[in-house]
Image (cartoon, rainbow, N blue to C red; front, side):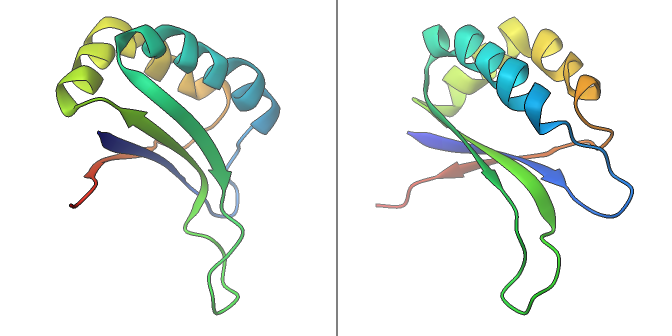
Length: 103
């Protein structure tokens, strides 16, 4: 199993439509990618840092896939549609990171 972190930077002046993201974008991600190896998709909202500063990422999607190959196949199949939807809810580019679970 791997975890894909899709992290949307925050900051003053950035736009993020959480209603669209939760109501349209994430359901589309689940619908398109679940048959291709997506096991779980969670969304978290950044609220700050331990010292009271602003969160570096305003929203993160945490996607669990069977493997990196499964994620790459899902992106190959539906990535244009899913990544093309991003400007509809934000004006920032997400940072995408692949993570594994150490044993």
